[in-house]
Length: 389
Image (cartoon, rainbow, N blue to C red; front, side, top):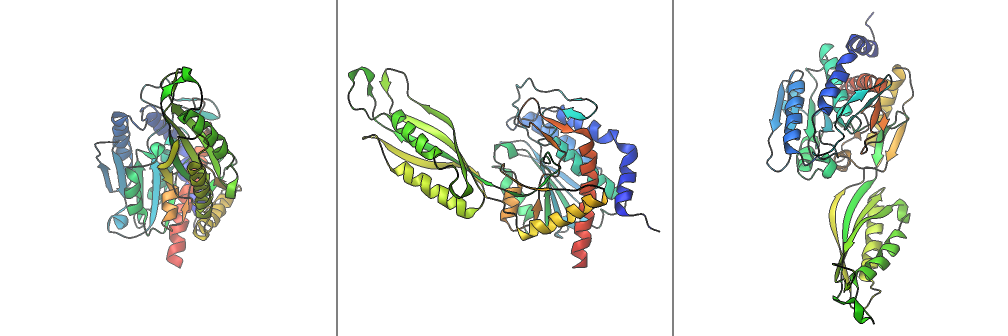
């Protein structure tokens, strides 16, 4: 009797539990903040080396203005067959001069920059593919792996590349960290970054009387904008302000950086319209204001395609003996771009952890092995499911 696939995956991983942690330690030791091109290029070299041992069509994509990136494919994918796309980013939020550089483990957790966001996810993808290769299942699958270097700053360079490679795919899997309850991500809110610029008239503060203060007008607008929280399920945060040249000068320029999250396109349109109306409504005579976009990602609704993928991965988790919740996550990722193409996508396949973007970042050690097995089984079942249709 043929041994079930989930048991064969577990049998492959059982004697290799040290290997994923060793790879994770190597990746975390490479400082790869989004602006650290030298470190990101080393990350690309390491990922190309590791993936090149599994996937025959692996190459480094060189870039001048950002870190190099990696594309690795099976031969069917390299021939243009549409299949499954795996996406993970190599950059972290920690700059090159950070003091947070060390990897360490205790009995239950791993700590270090990027263990959760998302070098742990890269390790999951690598070892899931290793398992499928060992079992003789990978060679005939059209599988593409994309490792980008600019996700933490909005993927300004890699977005067109990711969209090109993902367009028309059967499915995409993204390896951001898993939720604290083992959740995988079936939907994400969208994000819009805006800059509010207010202009007034400069003058000497000691003269008194009416003044066209850009900062005063900005203050009125900040309070009004913050009151938009909750419109159509959206959130708005004014997170950074600047203006003025000194306390004795009426400021003629002030600005604020806004972060807006929205569940769908309708909510995006409503919150943008409301923000634009507030921008055009002046409280202080002699001032003007304008609102301009700085960055953004579309919403990733919990689409029918995403829910079909979720049904597949949930069934795989049950074979491995546990329940797998789904999550609508407020944060954004490269999955937002992929979902906007109409491609079924799941995110959060990395290990379970928390406190990312801080020096307390961690993952649960056992979850990395759990996610490897889950991902391998899911990739195989997605491909089997598509061939049955």
